[in-house]
Each structure stands twice: as structure tokens, then as C-alpha cells.
Length: 317
Image (cartoon, rainbow, N blue to C red):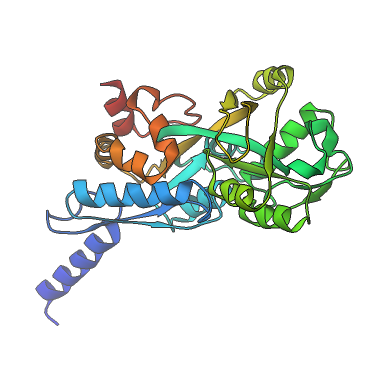
């Protein structure tokens, strides 16, 4: 093999390796972006598909694809190891990762960068009408699906239970994802499950189609105490009629879903990504009901980590 040909091949391979995050070596090279979402029963998954479609249609030579994952904590770890390029993450989990707290204690991931704060993720304590559970204090001694071990939902469950003076010693914790929790509620194997997702959530809708699902309210005083201790929480009201047989609004709290990348995403690509998404919000609305909450005016609200400079400039322009 002559030296010129060898150099060309090496240059070509280098270009392919960098295509995922850079503008590419010339105008004709594909940019590959893997997008981490969540479980198929949640909110991240359909939105991730919509984001991939928007990017493919509006950024030249883009090849974006969305994949089902274990959601926030798993997504941070996938960003860290480079197996994905973009991810949907709760703002509290992003905060923990960047600062090395909670499940990321001693495992700081300070390479992550925010691209946009998308919509509120409502924390829903779900039970059935025949459970007798009217208040979170009633969970004492009950089987509670607190989320997958080490997940964002599990951290939320622990913090909210603590605000009511409860620990895992006071309940029978079951470490189930919310899709698994929905099945367990249907089968009577748990008394309550914690779901953290935009409403209406498919898993709860599915449950309410076969059993009378009920969302347990978080008291206003507890809401205030949580927000004072954990500033990434916000107050949220689930409107009456969101789920079958839900006749009254329900007070609870929410975190924010943020779209996150790493410092390997160039400022130019960061700006292109958010420009494409926020220029086609009709597609996000079509993907899921929470799409109506995604606006340019709220794209910096609740952002708990440093932002990609290109994305930040787009929102501030």
C-alpha cells in the first residue's frame, strides 16, 4: 500500500470516528447521534423518537436514533461512557451527577452539559381506589414500589417519604420500574407505586383502564418543605379528568426533564440541535401530551447544570 493511500484511509477512519459529535470532515459525512430515552411505557421514549426525527429532517447529514433505556441514572452513565450522545434526564439527577451527590457520590460526571429544560415531570404516588390509602402517611406498613434501585424515582420517593417522617423501615419497599409497578398494582402485589413522568402517563392510563387508579396528594405544607430543602422541586397540580374516574385535581410536586449532552458536543452542533427542536414543537406536541409544556420561554427554567454555550446563546437571543 503506498503512503498516500494509507494516509487517506487513516484520515477517512478518523473522520468517521469523529462524525458523531463534530461538524464532520467535509460536507458529505454523516453525523451520528444516539439518544437515550427511557422505558417504552414512559414519556421520554416517544419524545426521543420525535427528537431523532426532527434532527434527521432539519440538520444536514444527521443520522439520529433514539433507544429505550433505564432512564435518568442509566442515561447519565451512558453519556459518561460515550455509548450515547444525548439523553433525557431529570434535573435533580443531572444535579446529583454533576456535583457527585446521592447515587453519584464519589462518581462525579462533570462532563455533562444541558441543552434545554423541556417540561415538568410529575411525581405521582399511584394506588387503587380499594387500597384505603388516602394520604402518604397511610403508606406505613404497605408494599410500595419506590422505583428501580438507585433510580431518580427512587431518590424522589425517599425524599418525599422522609418529608412525612417515613423511612424504608416503615414501609415494605419494592424496587420496581413504573411499568413493573403498574403490573404489580394490577395484580395486587403492591399497594402503591411511584411514577415520575409527564402526565398523562401511559402506565397509569393502562392501570386505570382495568382498575380504578388513584393519585395520592402531597400536602401543600409538605410541598413547601420539600422545595425549601430541594430547590429542583416545583409545585404541580394534576387536573381533574387527567385519568379515568379522577374527579378532582391532585396536588403534588414535579422535577424538570432536561435534554443533556456532554462537553464533546460542539457549541455549533448544540445550537443546531435546539434550533431544530424548538422550530418544530408541533412534532413534540404530537409525540406526547407534555409537548405543550415545551417552550423557548421556559427552556432555561430548572436547568441544574452548566449549559452547552451554543444552546444557551440560542435561548438568550
